[in-house]
Length: 431
Ligand SMILES: [Zn+2]
Image 1: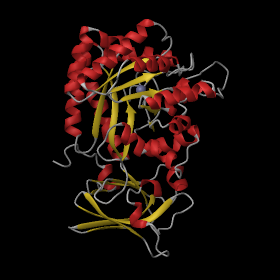
Image 2: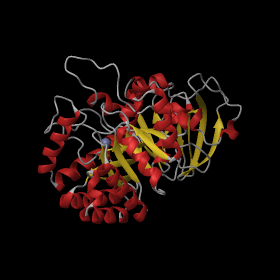
Image 3: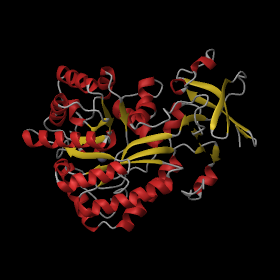
Image 4: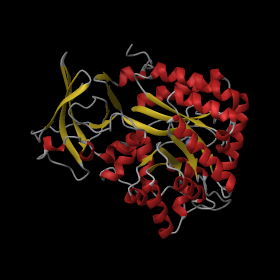
């Protein structure tokens, strides 16, 4: 294979690597950088660890590949992925999505759940993901069964994909006896507590439910990730409640706000104030541009030009860690997608006006997503770092993002080429 040399001891690859993702810049100070921020580098590794990064001197023999770290999906729903065919939401709005989701839940079986989740993990692995945070519909007795099935899958897949699970229930469920039991089990399984906070969310009831959730998570020492303000109405009203709660309680667990879409509709001053408050409480944000662009702000016979979306740049400016996720895949909430992080980058860039050649443009898909998920590896390519790469058949960002590029993977030092990947990878590939 071109550009890849492997011996029994040292393997190496020559590739273009984004400057912002090189963790040892001191080793390659004089390296040339293209206008798109890419550096031609030879990376060598032994077993699972990178041992050297060298600049490529010969400018007449530059690499033909673009190398990224294996990527991270900070917000997914693998339990309901691929339910669109049976439960389509043709009107494309939030209320119908919820209605169809609840209809599907009534007939959801463990077999369906496992089959869909495994299909999701398979695709995600092939497409270059190393870690996924998935929200799981967890209400009632079935919720416990879903968790058991997903935890079995988590263990089965752990050598290929790190799966983080978040229990998705109505917010007030965490104040009930059943909710406390679920929280206890979720904490034992290493999961996170989730919920949904959308308008109307004024009043004492919401405040109390949020406070109970945060207290419970602190007692159990597990993180929180809530769907909040996924709406085009009452901008930032869920966020306002969250900040009031955090002002009244000394929180010590990581909190992620997923969506935060209507925050983008606040006035600039109000937005800045809220972003600063989020930063002061060290709350992280996952922006989900695909689902937001599809579901929110729909009006009959009108093309919406003002779109609810987390104000990514203003949040970054305030010091908030912001990741970008894919969210739903072929379910009532979003009809498209296939757990492809490269498609996510190419689709999200025009919606967010971020650019991959800027550090803060690439971070939401790479280092910020890893930080938000608390992963051991920060996602930079560095000496002693893991040999875990996605290698694209492209030499520029424009080429990489213009079509679905062919790719190879290096997983813990082992190569998975296109042929290997086209045969269904097995979760026990490393056993
Ligand atoms: Zn979601």
